[in-house]
Image (tube, rainbow, N blue to C red; front, side, top):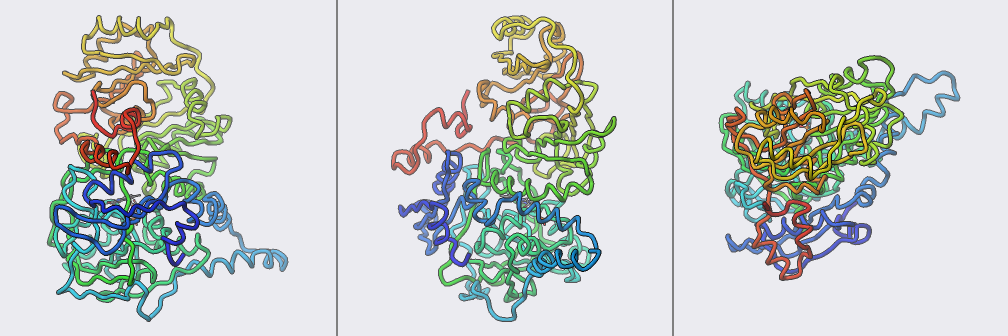
Length: 607
Ligand SMILES: Cc1cc2nc3c(=O)[nH]c(=O)nc-3n(C[C@H](O)[C@H](O)[C@H](O)COP(=O)(O)O)c2cc1C
């Protein structure tokens, strides 16, 4: 894929917007809205500007490259399941017995020669233009400010190439980069990630760490950058395997780090381990802001480019977004890599509104008592799977995992408080709910057994239940029951929160004849009739150890937390669009959305 824009014109139904548009909010808002529409398209913004800084950029911004499943599959040039099959085959490879078996293995072995990157000594296409340190100016790049509350502009599709102190390991990670000024970037590699491990080595040795950030080129590079490869394995091996072609690498100009020949823009520099700076806030892929925290800083040495570079970027925020499609490919491709530690795992699914680590469903061939628990511990103990907060396991007779209604019904019919494991473990650095950072509650539901015997003793209509609830607590505002036909209907209520929900749950015990599963959310910014965003909210907002009660019914407190809950960190806000920007884009016919769309995806705050 030499020219991504041409390729997207030919294969991706690329939308081109020539109108001058601001990199602050306007461009990101258009991309954000587009990827939430049915059949969303990639967009080329050919005329980016920055009104505040009075800049007209001389390169376009390309967004939503992974705009839908079909396009994602085209980028891979095969279905992700086919890539998974290839990996599965490789993992099961055995020494051949006899000449015929050797012969049969030959094509697989020949294909493996594509895996290893090729290193060229020549200058790369990405080095057609070389900007020396004295002329470096990050303001020449159309770096986006996505959300009003962001701490500045961020490179959101940066391929961050790093290497270990001894140079034996190289890594590619997709981490956001905050622009501080003309030649400094904030390096948001979280503590669990490979580049952060390398950084520790440089810090201990008291040496500056070389880093090269690439933007653009084959979109598969960026997918590889976010793929949860085991530590020590260079992501370019995965690239070669998927593409069926060796990655072509060239050396950075000012350090030894190898980067793909065909990327569009390359930012090289050094991180001084002594120099940390506040990074953020940033409206993140959880749909919440991540708060300000100190991170290392890259001082830029050199910028190189193709003669006609294209600036690739993405928007993160509330689902569904582009990472839905990247994540879908990752989920499919990594299934065979989970099987060595969980051999009876048949499939797994990370629903997009669970923003990946907040909810995972696993289907398994259950062989013995405690088997599902064994899987929970396995998942919570391995690589980035250990960030998963809520894991539900079902048996092999369950419906397809992405058949949302059927699988929910199956789970609710098997939901048994005695089969719920609540424990503690490592959590994603982005998680905002635990009382302390990095460690928090884990919920595992074993729904592999037969249906439970008991249903609700005395079902009530939504209206009667709400009336009875209001008698108990006047701050309960709405009630809607979902899946009433199952053994464990879900009773969802919205509240005006003035105290800890644990007190309210305790008072609601008197209604235990009428409730099996109670879920509580704030009235503000939650629509009781929108299960997609309600699931997003609840799995995002809970720490299982603090917020789930199992007796006399299952109660889940999905409200925002504060000191009334014993929560002393800052509770971040949702990522909301800026109303004036949406209105102006709508007026100029650059987006076409209505109130229902805005409410459905939580684009703006509501009561
Ligand atoms: C759109 C997007 C943005 C991301 N931003 C970050 C980030 O800023 N920091 C981070 O540590 N991980 C981020 N990630 C996740 C990492 O890319 C992912 O965990 C990857 O596997 C890390 O690679 P590593 O294990 O080689 O460090 C992001 C992922 C996506 C899809």
